[in-house]
Amino acid sequence: MVDYAQQPQLPIISQPSADIIPQRPSADPNNASSSNLDLSASVNPNYIQASVGSPQAPEANSQRREIGDLAVWTLSSAKPGNGVEQLRDDSTSTFWQSDGTQPHFVNIQFLKKMRVQEISLYLDFKTDESYTPQKISIRVGNCFYELQEVKLIDFEEPIGWFTFKLEEKTSSGLLLKPYIKTMFVQLAILQNQHSGRDTHIRQIKIFAPREQHSSSDMYPHFQTTQMTQYSTIR
Image (cartoon, rainbow, N blue to C red; front, side, top):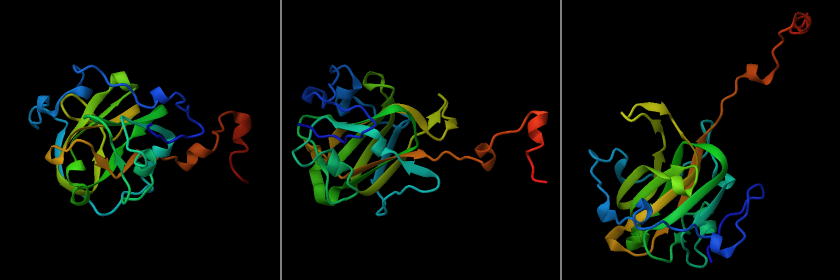
């Protein structure tokens, strides 16, 4: 049984069979072998390489907020005691461990469209060895069947926190918005280090930009002649 985080304001998955979001046929990228993916940066603009992470955990600040608690999290599989709770407990000593065939999935579903700015995850090759992901695809969409890849990451024995920006760009690569508006985010683990079968991810955080409100937005605008006489103190 796969466990998942439940939030009171969000719909709860009640049927055991619904805990795992079904996988698509093999023709779909979700089930595609990593050998079928062209990892050339010149061909795939979403492709990046990562090896050295940060020892410092990313935190919410005046520019961003962590929105993981606003989502329903589901996993393609999990070992008992190594599920969503361990993935989201703010401890790098715990981890999610999959329990099935590749690819493995982390699905993050929101009740409404959210502005997703960054995704951070903690990996530890020194401890997890062949359980550590090597290739991860980040996909977004309005639902499971509309997912599009926005990042394809190739890790080389990663240790630490890795943060990836999600941005809306034109087909020519020009930046439109420093975030992506979406209801569904999926992390697909396509391959592990040294051809490992199951995977370990120790933490995942997901961030949205904070909305900036000017002081003028907090008060009504006096427009009529009758109301303007009360707009200032005499």
